[in-house]
Structures are given as C-alpha cells and as structure tokens.
Length: 325
Ligand SMILES: Cc1cc2nc3c(=O)[nH]c(=O)nc-3n(C[C@H](O)[C@H](O)[C@H](O)COP(=O)(O)OP(=O)(O)OC[C@H]3O[C@@H](n4cnc5c(N)ncnc54)[C@H](O)[C@@H]3O)c2cc1C
Ligand code: SF4
View 1 (cartoon, helix red, strand yellow):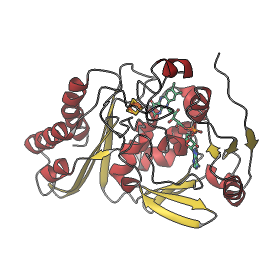
View 2 (cartoon, helix red, strand yellow):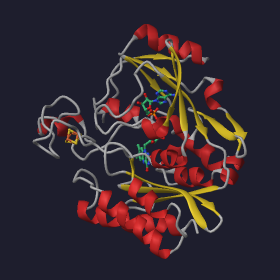
View 3 (cartoon, helix red, strand yellow):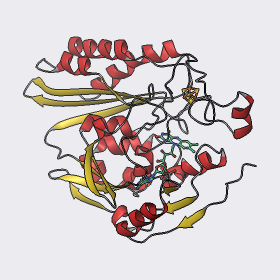
View 4 (tube, helix red, strand yellow):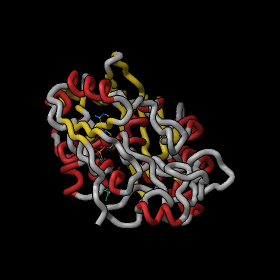
C-alpha cells in the first residue's frame, strides 16, 4: 500500500487566511482541494509539500454567481459534480457541463474541483508510476532524474496537459483570478499554460486560484470531443474544443484548441482562419480539421499509438465542429 508522507494540515476559513498561511510557510506549502490529483502524487513522492492547505472550507471559493448574459463566476473549489448539475451552467454553458461530465467517475467528480482540474499536474507514462517503478528507470527529468525517457536528447519535459476543462476554458476565453499576499491578478486561460511539462503553469506557488470567469454568452457556441480508451474513468489522450460565433450565414470568430497531446493546450490558429469569414459548411470544416491534423504532434508518452492520435485530431475536430451546426 502506498502511504502519504507526513505533513501539516491547515484549514483556513477565508481567502485572506489561506494566502497568509502560504505566504508565511513559503514554497514548502501547497494548496489542496479535492485531493484527487495531489494526494496520489504525494503517495508516489512526486510532490512533497510539508504543509497542505485545504481550500474546501472557504465559502467564497464554493460559489457560482452570475448568468450567461453577464458572464458567470465559478469559485475554484466548486466540485465537478456541481459543475455538471448546475442549472445555469447547463443552460448557458453546456460545453462546460459536458466536458466536466467526461472527467473520471461520479465519485471522483464529487471530490474533484474545477480549480484542481485547471491546475492538474502534467502526465506521462514514465512519470505516473509509483516510487519504486520510477527508481527502476533512474527517475526522469520531471522528478529526481536527469533524462527525459520520451525524448532522451531533450532538456525539456514533454509531460502532457491532461485536463478536460482546460481546452474548453481556452476556447471560450475564460479568465482566472489569482490572489497572493502581494495582490490580485486576472489572467486569460489562453496565456496561463506553459509549453513545459515541469513548469506548466504561469501561477506562482504562493498564489491561490480564487475563481474562474466565463465570458457572456453573446451568441457563441462551443463543443468538446474527448479521445480515451474506455468510455469512462480515463484521462483524455486528445481533447478538441471548438468555438464558433456566427454573423448571419458566415463565421465571425472560430477557435480550435487541442488538449491532451502536449504540455500546454494548443490553439490551432490556422483552423480558426480556415473558418473565419466563410460559410459554416462541409468544405470549410474539412479545411479546419486538416489544419488541426497538421498542427497535432502527439508524443509517445500516453495511451494509444501517437500517429493514430494525430489522425484522430482531424476526426475529432470534424466531430466537434459538425456538432455546432
Ligand atoms: C483515476 C483518476 C481519473 C481521472 N480522470 C480524469 C479525467 O478523465 N479528466 C481530467 O481532466 N482529470 C482527471 N483526473 C484528475 C483529477 O481527478 C481532476 O482533474 C480533478 O478535477 C482535480 O481536482 P482536485 O480538486 O481533486 O485537485 P487537487 O488534487 O486538490 O489539486 C490539484 C492541484 O491544484 C492545486 N490547487 C487546487 N486548488 C487550488 C486553488 N484554489 N489555488 C491554488 N492551487 C490549487 C493543488 O495544489 C494541486 O497542485 C483523474 C484523476 C484520477 C485519480
Ligand atoms: S516527458 Fe520526459 S521528463 Fe517529462 S515526465 Fe515524461 S519522461 Fe519524464
């Protein structure tokens, strides 16, 4: 049985208290929400905070306010089950509820939060293993080693951003509010993820993710398609988020964002360009799907053969766009 290492556990009741604790303790502290990602990582000795600060008892982080016309604000500790079941999210942001519904299992969605999902550690077949397994290969760059087993000549880690909600948030133009003792800042989801499997977030360790701001629903539509081996309980090994806004018969704005194939979500600008100003018809959808295929370069560090996952970028982009017509 894998055991958790020893750690101090703190339970603040306000955001001010939460950021003060992390500010006082310093980089050996880490926030936890549902713990469905952090605790397994601690058991595998991949993340080793000495102080764990729960964000589940802070009322401000558990709220959903607003509505589609004005935009919705979702507290970082809102559970994935609440995202799936919230009437306003289902009505005004169905793509967010639908993507959340594909995450793991009902029990994990009861525990896991939207904030934890958006800050999920990157994944790799050589990393998501217990300590002894990783020791057997002399570890790897991401933790305790000095070689990347996926690309041995590389000085970069290629572990994969594997959240189902991340590509959706980038596609719909969500913003994240971060708070620390140094102040507050808003950051676009699109600029929040680094193309680096180790340093994968723009967030500093002392920053608390307070809430997620979804933009007003002024006529845009979005969809999400997920590739995984099983029908449930599997991380995405490709996720395609599609966003379209129409102006009469023509596409005014379009975005295709790929998740699950690189350390950060990939916005395929060429796919958007293939659609913008055009009729939303088969030919232009096909051109956008082709652009997604060209841009997708999955590596051999998750499930399925990488060339097949690349082919699926075309197919899943087609499906995501066709579902919006
Ligand atoms: C078997 C299994 C299957 C899974 N399948 C999927 C899947 O299909 N798709 C998918 O997207 N995910 C999947 N997950 C990953 C995970 O369960 C979810 O992403 C979940 O939403 C994580 O949320 P959490 O609250 O449990 O995060 P936690 O584990 O509590 O935290 C995750 C990270 O976020 C940080 N954090 C959390 N809240 C804050 C905050 N407010 N401010 C600052 N930092 C914070 C933590 O420090 C940690 O680094 C799976 C996990 C398991 C164990
Ligand atoms: S991509 Fe390379 S460095 Fe990163 S986790 Fe995998 S093997 Fe390790």
